[in-house]
Length: 329
Image 1 (cartoon, helix red, strand yellow):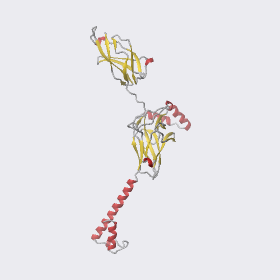
Image 2 (cartoon, one colour; image 1 turned 90 degrees about the horizontal axis):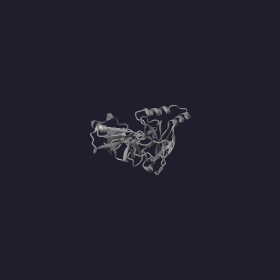
Image 3 (cartoon, one colour; image 1 turned 180 degrees about the vertical axis):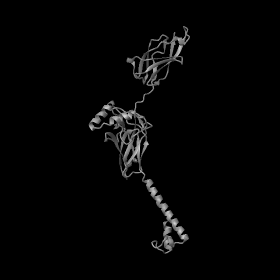
Image 4 (tube, one colour; image 1 turned 60 degrees about the vertical axis):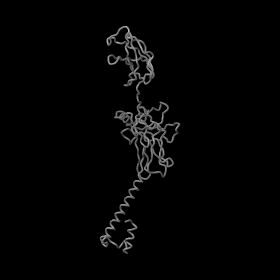
């Protein structure tokens, strides 16, 4: 029974609502009255719940940032904006549940474990690129933040195509401490490096709740800011054979060679020899080494014998692709 039926029921009995009490109703009327009250209460509750649901306002990350970004020092020159996880766009965040007016928001870099405060070692910066700049860099405590807006004409969605991550040097942190008379940032930076995820950070997006007192916050997935060491690669070698006496110079061309690289010659599991390149000729894309002599005790050789070997470059804990190499008598 709805509210109209209730009014009709009361009028038809010619008893004013104020004068009619629960005791004045007979059994059937009492049941109908209670049924009506329950239905009205249920209706009010459902309306209240729907209003609460429609009033839910939250920050949502639509596109997560890339899980790796090369953080650069200020002196390193051009910095690229942080891309999204797919590498096809940029981090995107949306204000859900409110579209009546523009809302200002901030984005800053936090530690991977503590999101309330800016990261002591990394800070955010605005990067000017061909995609334009839809945000500005502002002071945020002792660090920096990116200020941007959610606008109704953009569906309250913000594409942050101008976020860069800067790595601070220890002397910069010390200088900042002296100016602010604080002595905690350096320790925080060192502690961050000692923690379980050194070189990691997160993006934190936050804005004021447009209807209530409070802050809305959304935290991104972890971003690795350390330089990733890639496996070395061999593209070509100057010679692919040598006598068992060795001694000839071998030029290796490729990429991702470090100063600690070694060239490893091997014949199956029977024989293995690692040699260091000539220090003055070690570069990221090439190196020079002397071919080691082959130990003939590991094989029965005659004058016409050839030994099929493999060589590879071992650098930064990773091994390159193998190249065929032949020893002869």
